[in-house]
Image (cartoon, one colour):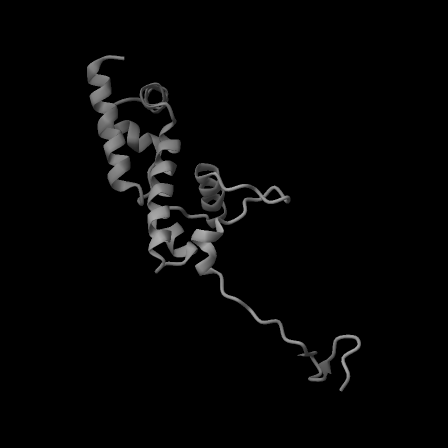
Amino acid sequence: MDRADLVRLRKARDRIDREYADPLDVESLARTALMSAGHFSRSFRAAYGETPYGYLMTRRIERAKALLRRGDLSVTEVCVAVGCTSLGSFSTSFAKLVGVPRASTGRPSPPTSLMQRSTASRASPRRSPDRSGIEKRPPGDAP
C-alpha cells in the first residue's frame, strides 16, 4: 500500500472518529478515501487490523462506556446518542467489545455496573384485580 492510500484511509478513519454518531456506510467512507467500496474495505482492514464497521462500532462503544459511567442517561438514550438504531445490536456489540459474559440463554447479559441505573425496580402486587374487578389472592392467602 502506498503513502497516498494511507493518507486517504486516514481521512476516512478521522471522519469515523468525528462523525461516529451519524449514519455512516462503507460507500460514503470509500468516497472520502477516493476508493471503491471493496478496495476501501480491504485496504482499511489491512492498514488498521479491523473492518471499517468494526472500527466504527469500537468508537461507538468507547463513547457509550463514557456516557454510561456519567450516569445521567438511560441505556436507550446512550444507544441513540452514539448512533446505534437497535438496542439489541448495541447490547450485543457492547458485550462483545467490553467482554461481558453471556447468560445461559445465549443472549448477552447487560453490564450490570454500567446499566443497572437504567432499570427501574418494580414491586409486584400481592393482589391483582381481574377484569371483573374482583381481587385475586395467591393460594393460601387468608382474607
